[in-house]
Length: 157
Image (tube, rainbow, N blue to C red; front, top):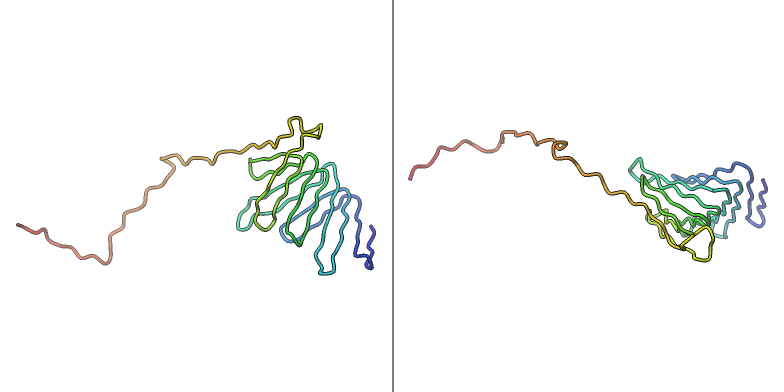
């Protein structure tokens, strides 16, 4: 571990875990630089390094993996490089580079034809359809008498 207060640089090696709110980054090596306004830029290296964020108000997580992850607290983004992939539930996207916004929970994937590990240079995605609710799985609404209506007698012409 190296912490240089003057240059605002820190280096952590080993089984490193960095947590900020609902975000967790795990890596073999993490470099942290802090700018003059206090924002941090982390570069995590691993085989792979991982990134995880819990979605607001749910029990769901976004999980990302890459040989290198760059997390910028000012831009609120995580960039995953080299055999990058992001999973949410049963959905998964793979590409050479994936940019994930921790603020909007949206990600953008790019392929890279020049990479030998990206056979076609394409982004690959597996997206599962939402499960359909079976008709008999829906409970009928209970019928309740109205408290505000009064009975009326039938009218005769």
